[in-house]
Length: 157
Image 1 (cartoon, helix red, strand yellow):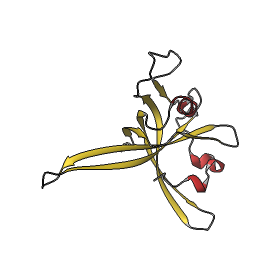
Image 2 (cartoon, rainbow, N blue to C red):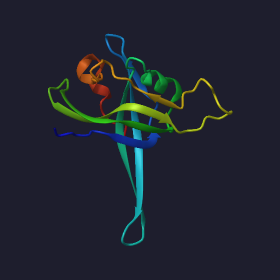
Image 3 (cartoon, rainbow, N blue to C red):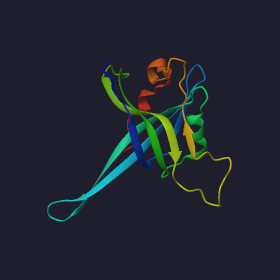
Image 4 (cartoon, rainbow, N blue to C red):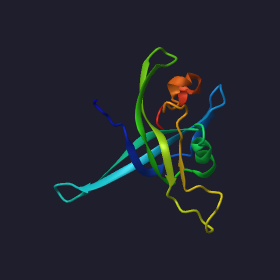
């Protein structure tokens, strides 16, 4: 049997506060804009830097509240670790044009930005998602097309 792997691990900073929506069935979903940067020295000795922007989607699955945790504790500039998988989607916008997006569906999140004023016992440093159903399938935008708002699907830069 052939096996495959779709795994993404990111550490970066939020480019905006999390955007949280609810589906028609009441499931909450958070969208994060996460920046990762790398730097290097080019052949002429100049320091170069490149920033990549990632769209991260966190669902409130059974047994986890990743979207709620993101909404309550994350803000623009915070550093987070995200573990998840890549998902590609296409859809048709209001003008009939085919649109494409690449997303990281987060399964685990660790908040890396220290909070001022000591420790807060109510702030979870680490959160992870449980499968939505027994066979290991998790929710996605395909299950809840009404959660999409075409006007918000562009990256914030």
